Image (cartoon, rainbow, N blue to C red; front, side, top):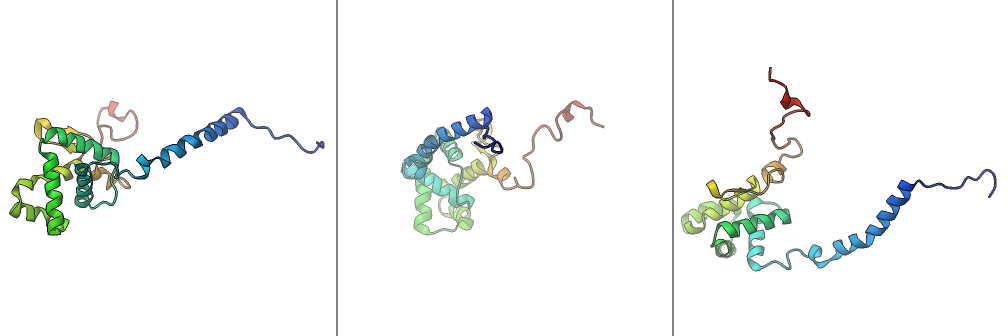
Length: 173
């Protein structure tokens, strides 16, 4: 080494960060390439697939949060004993009659009153984050409910503290 060349020195933090990043690559590859993440719909039961398809159809979204979908589905199964049969019947009715989402409620009210509440319940879950009504109501999402996601780029969901930290401790003017 000549006198003008200085050795490269790496701090401990940079070295440890790089080592941790290098060690996490195989784990991330395993997670991202596993069949569970590669094809999430493939392993679902028919009723879950119908619920997912109905949710996409009713909300008009191309993709919905799979974790929230699972929570809504499981809670609806607990609250409504005939939920699976209703979901499958509604999915079959929509498929057989080629009904547009905008006309669905009017058509159900006229032709299938027994299924008329289901789209409202599903939309209530997705947009409000609440499954059930009255004392049975269960809040499963707030920040990630679609009503708050839709305006997230301009508005924050309302909370109990409007303003900077500590503003709630001051007496209002």
